[in-house]
Amino acid sequence: MSVCMKRCVFLDRDGIVNVRAIPGYIETWDDFELLPHFPEMLRQVRAMGFVAVIITNQRGVARGIMTREAVDRIHANLRALLQAEHGLELLDVMVCPHEKVSCDCRKPQPKMLLDAAARHNIDLAASWMIGDTESDIEAGRRAGCRTILVSDEPSDTVATQRVASMRDLALKIKDILAE
Ligand SMILES: [Mg+2]
Image (cartoon, rainbow, N blue to C red; front, side, top):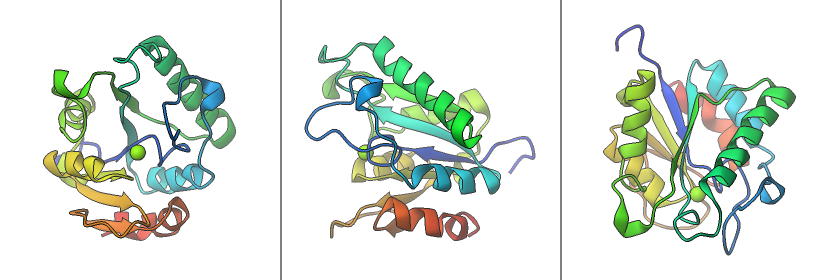
C-alpha cells in the first residue's frame, strides 16, 4: 500500500447509519433517525485510521418521491450533526439516484466505491464495505474490499464477516479492522 493512500470504511446508509423507512424512503431530515450505535462505531473506525464514505442507493429520486436536492440536504444535515455532536467526519457521501435498469452505479454494482476511491485516493484492497443487505456486500466484494454484513436473518452471505446488529458491530469493529 502506498503511504499516501487512504484506508476507507464504506457505509451503506439505511439500516447502518439510520433507521430504515419501511415501507418507503427517507424523504426529509424529519424522517431521519440516527441508529444509536452508529456514532460509537464511526468513532472507532476513525480512531483506527480509516476514513468513512457513505454509499447509498436512493431510487426515490428517480421515482419523483424526493428531489436530489432534498437528499443532499439530508446528508449535509447528517454531516453537520456528526461533527457538532460527536466531532466525527464523513469524507464523502455517494448517491445513486437512478432506477434499477437505467444506470451503472446502483449497488450491487461497485461504481460508487470505485469513483470514491479515484476521487480520494483510497486503497480498495485495504478497505471495507459495511451493509445490511447482500447487495451492499456484493458491491464491496466487486470493488475488491472486505465486507461486513449486519443482519440477524439466517441468510446466506459471501461477506467476510457477519454481525447480528449495529450494537454488535460497535463492539467488534475494532478487532475486525485490526485483522
Ligand atoms: Mg441498507
